[in-house]
Amino acid sequence: MQLSEQFLKRSARLAYSASILALTFSLAACGGGADTTTAEGGDSAATDTADAGAGVSGDIQIDGSSTVFPISEAVAEEFQAANPGTNVTVGVSGTGGGFEKFCAGQTDISNASRAIKDEEVAACEAAGIEFIEVPIAYDGITLVTNPANDFAQCLTIEQLNTLWSPDSEGSITNWNQVDPSFPDKELALFGPGTDSGTFDYFTEEVNGEEGASRGDYTASEDDNVIVTGVESSDGSLGYFGYAYYEENKDQLKSLEIENEAGECVAASTETIADGSYNPLSRPMFIYVKKEAYDSKPQVKAFVDFQLADENSELVREVGYISLPEADLAESRSKVEGGVTGKS
Image 1 (cartoon, rainbow, N blue to C red):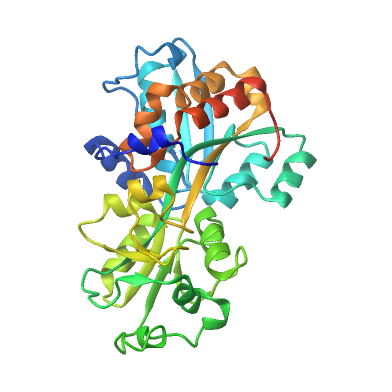
Image 2: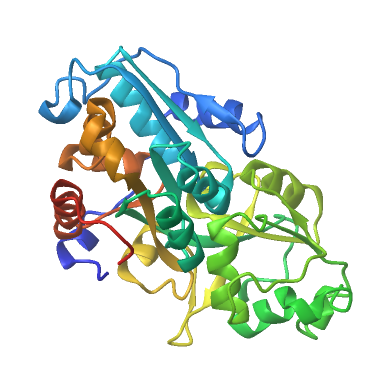
């Protein structure tokens, strides 16, 4: 999908609210894969919105990507405030783990930081589960290191391949093996686990094959574990979604990447939106179980609420890039038309 010029002009990010930050920290502390339920109550600018589905009640089960988690959690808070009879549960099993639950019929919506794989499509088909693939936002995978790192500023994709290639396991252990100008400092690598869509996307772009990565790094589906690890060593390097860097930028240093034009570019809302932060910019999705959307009023109301124009603000509030108006309208059209399957 291409970002519209109109969108580029209006894509400045708003600061995190204190309530969302506190909730994100407390829920992430529960660990990857744990189901977490949003708190009810609180003021909501969207409470009087026509698309809020006022009066619906019942449970909504969501699981999947930790990267998409802050968006779903923010939407869930606002939706529950507008609909006190609903109970939205958001899990963080990772994109792959979320699809396992989704295709097993355990959830209504699956959060994903990559497109669904063919084998996951087959699993859903075998279980008789039809889904609607819905793009909801854009993100940029951000490289982070300890602020004490004063030598690395911009890394090329080739250097990232040297750092993360499967062939580098056990052999590339110091920074000076990546670039002779770097010091003889031991590497400490941190990143998402193999159930993460961020892991899949990063490895495909950097190593040329989805899932191809060295295994001797500290892996976690909980991005806050990666933050803590990177903070603990001045030889560290890690990666995750842009929102987690923004949330922790006082404790971390972000690194630029050399893009396809040969320019060193830092991740930001502007560079992710205009496409210059490539190749590590990507779309994010929710996958909606069609049967749940058609038969559960609370699920339909929640999805419609998330895709309402006025609620694009929630995407920006938690540090991501909201869809251009035309693309958001296309997502709504897919849902309303019941267009199923992988794009």
